[in-house]
Length: 434
Image 1 (cartoon, one colour):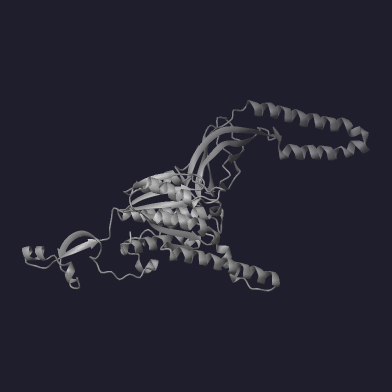
Image 2 (cartoon, rainbow, N blue to C red):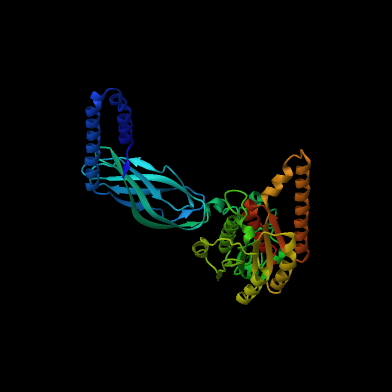
């Protein structure tokens, strides 16, 4: 039981009133009478408060939450008391949620239902647990707050925010060229896999004409091709300590997951199979599967995947992938490169290149670019600027060394990774390198 503000103010006023009896002893009986009345009221109110029933409460959560996307969480109170009284409510939410409008003070209707809402914004992926609800109920005479913890457990999954990159989905399909920066001028009908026969159109190359079908139908018929299908893409995601870096609200690891989900969606729409493997932390493996339903499987399998504090072990990751994946595939290795990595990374990539086409996507620290943009005003800033340039030059040399070994490389800031990967994948498909 917690004394209310009204009770504390009454006690303070009674203490101040004690100055009168101190100066005039005839007032002492009246002061004691006032104290007795206050104590009696508070004790009666205390008893009434304990006799009142606690409200029943339930929590209503969305089926799932998306990282960084605000959601509304509802609490419903069923008030069994015949008299309405004020209630202060605080939901014991998980620390991974940033909440607004808590605690809530409301006055539920007597013998009725009351719904309250508050906003929650997920800051981390994974499973989030609500453990209970703190209630403070005002006593009938408003002398006390009765505080109780009601156990009310709920669990909700926080998924990567695919909506943040879904706007690129249409650009990653056929209408992607100008918007995504790809400058290809392939005519309709060219490709690697036969698609269908159609009537000849002006501009079709002669090698595209099917002369047997043309002779049979007595008109020119062209063969139409499409980009190769039934290929496979394997994502190999680094779960090491460098992926914990954070340039904005999302960590480099969360940006990587967004890129994986977007490219997986595009590849599945293209008819390719998609698989996934992680290393240097939590080890997960998903066999390549075709069909758009694989995107839901990816969501449910990766929503709680987190980076670790381990050092990336590229050799082990390459060896395990070769044991699991026999068919030739495009291996998309997403990591955060350093200049000292080539001694370990290059042998692992050469091992993968014996069977697969390898694409290495690395994320730059945006803070380094921002450091170069700062004005140099003193010697310390000049040293920091020079050290940053030296580091970036070493990093560029590491990327050049990979490219010289025949590896396709991307070195971009995290927020550009999704679009860069989709562009590179579409170019690989267009040039039949896989």
